[in-house]
Each structure stands twice: as structure tokens, then as C-alpha cells.
Image (cartoon, rainbow, N blue to C red; front, side, top):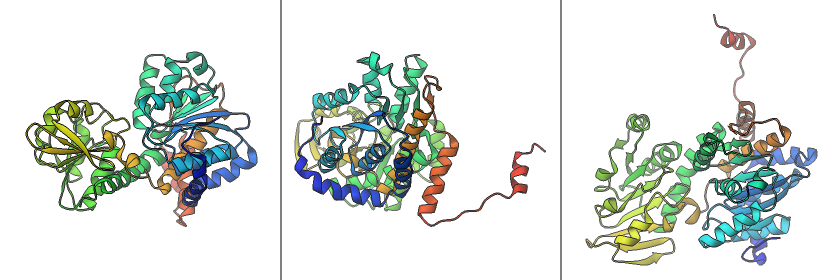
Length: 413
């Protein structure tokens, strides 16, 4: 059972997957191990992830471990149709194609949710929420789940606080080998890649305004500065704002930043970060891009309401003419610019993230029935093991503690 754009694209998809797997050595090591032990035999995994070549590497690893895999997209614009076709030929039940309508997007999630999953893997929380709200009887049968993103973890912790969470969840996003690398280096590079592919503008010399200074925001800010941009950070958290100041960035409220910014990038996980009053104050030609999971950070509703006219000027660029005669340019409909206008994170970074996912899924199966209905972090020893394997794959050796050093660190004296 599947629904993809065109199975004839599978050949090209296999080439893309092969390229990703070549650059994901840790996940390939785990695949080899799990193919021998089959820890997921008889387990049905339902996943809502960006259907990219890197996700395919994870799906193929789960298949090798004995799982049955159902997959839908976590963003209507992020699916690589060639990859979706190749995964169908591999035996994955894929419901995804690039350019889904909102109705089609949730229909695809519903097909995956109704597969009666044992394990739920999500990117953003839409699958978790669908199971809890629409089919709670199926949610009650789930062994456990994982969550890839900051946004999704926020939603799941809210479910936990409300006493509504129906199964244990591993917050993969909270693993150090995930957020320190995927969120920072992966999003930092891929967001600017998306902006450059969409617009072909020069980053050097531009004033880039980054809204939010979590790991995603600081990754974007650092990469933009490295490319010659003058970077301004906006924040609501005093601690993060202070970090940005001491990292050498200019910090100010959005109402001031909109007067000087050339490129605006939202990375907060919150709604209405850039609103009508901000848009009307921006310079002529300002570019708006979003790096948060959902398309709610830039108020597209406000932009549609106040604009005199709009037109598509490039594949992922829409020009809006404002009442004051100025123009602003929205990228990728306000959706994740790194996946809608580019290819998402480099495979080397997703090697870490999806190794976390593979180990988290195996851990949930091993602990079946032994975990409370809470949001957990992946055990530190597994996090550390991933880092060691990554260093090993890079040919890098590190020191080890001597017995004397270990005892010193463990002593209270």
C-alpha cells in the first residue's frame, strides 16, 4: 500500500540514497549489526519524517532490522519524489509526494497512523497528536515513540503535563549528538543553502536578522557571519539574548531590527514572530525566510491581508507589494526554507540524528512495558557511543581517562 508521485523515478532515487548512505557511516554500522540480530522483527514502525535520501537510509536500516515501515512526509514541500519511489520498491509503505495540499498532507498522516503501529517516529509531532486526538484506541496500543524536533518535543511535554500522553516517548532532539550538531551545524548550513538557492543573493554585506537564539538560531547566526553578513539577533529569553551579545552579535527588539534588516530568518518555534506591523516597516526588498518546523513564525495571513498584490518571481520566491509601495519577498511559502528550497541537512549530520533514532527505536522495543508514559532522553551511554562511532569513522582518536583520573573524578575528597 502506498501513494507516491511516480514509481518510474525510483532509479534516480536509488542513486540519491546511495550517495546519502556513503556519507552516513555510523548508521551503516548500526544497520550491519541490526541486520544480524533482527531486534525489530515483527515490529511495525509508523513514521512521519521529511522524505529525503537521509530518511531513506534510516527506513532501510529499520527494514534490515526486521521492521515493517510506514512513512508519510512531515512537510508538504520537503519530499524528494525520487526517494519516495525507491522506498516503495524496497517495501516501505510510503504516502508522500512533493507539493501536497493541507488536506492531502493530513490524509497521508492518517494512512500511516491507521496502520496500527507498535513504534511511532515523528518530526514535529503531527503523527503523535493525530494518534492521541483522532484514534486514541490505536495510541493505547503503541509501545513507544520518538520525536526528532524541538517543536515536537514541546508538544509532547505539554501532553505529558496534561496527563494525556498514552505511551513513552524518546526525545531524540534532546540527545547531545542530535541538537549540538543537527540543530546547530545542519540547520545553520542548510538554511543559508536554501536562501541562496531560492534567491541567488549575496550574503556578504547583508544585514541578516535571526529571530531566536536556540541551537538552530545560533547555528544560522554563526554561518551567516562566516559568510560576511552583519548579524542581528532578536530574542525574548534574557539568558539567550545575553549569550548572543557575548557571542559578538548585536541584539535588539524586532521592531528595531525590521528597519535595518535585509534578510529575516525565524527560528523560534513560536507563532507570529514577524507580523503586519513589522512587514510595513521593512526596507524595500526585504527577504523573509523561516527555519522553524511550522509555517506559523512569519504571519503569512497578515502578509496576504495587507498586500496590494503578489506575484511569483522565482520558483520559491513570492513578491508582495505593500500599501507603502515597498516590496517584501517570502521564501517557500513561509515553510522550512532548507527543505522546501534546498535538500535539507547534509547527510553527515543526519548520520548522527538518525543513528539516535535507530537506537531509540531499539531501546523502546527492548524496554517494552517497562517505561512510564513520559518523555525521556536517550540514555547517555548510547549518546556517547554514537559520538565514538562518528569519530572512529572520521579516523580520529581521543584520550581515555587513566584509572587514577577516573577515581579522582568519582571521589568527593
